[in-house]
Length: 164
Image (cartoon, rainbow, N blue to C red):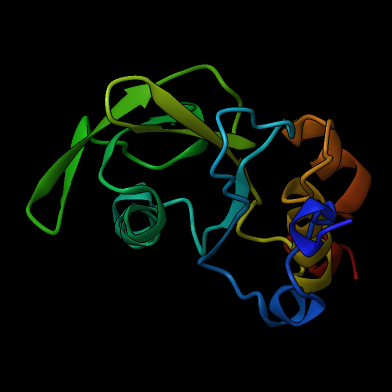
């Protein structure tokens, strides 16, 4: 069997990446094929619910890997004051209100190429956020964003501190 005939195993992001994840980070699982088998294409852990502050860095990171981002779909109830558009590096990105839940963001590249990101709540503990993000970016993940968050996130840190 020729070396090129050997199947390439699916690779996950290295463990070091998950240990280094901090708020404001986007982890992406991007495949160069038309068939994306996982439910989610990546994960994002914003620092706050201020979308005008958080979104430009995410868009820059996504643009570097995907090309120009044209739209972002969000559940506006989960964010503070969502504008209808943001300008990032002289490009207009439209923001659409979708009842997708506060656990996902829909990213559109071009006219109709969509990517779905898990959105980890800003007040999530680092270990729980890393666990949720690692699960979301697995190539074989078939679990919806809300289920990942329920399974991996403990009670938010702010609530634990209030009750102690």
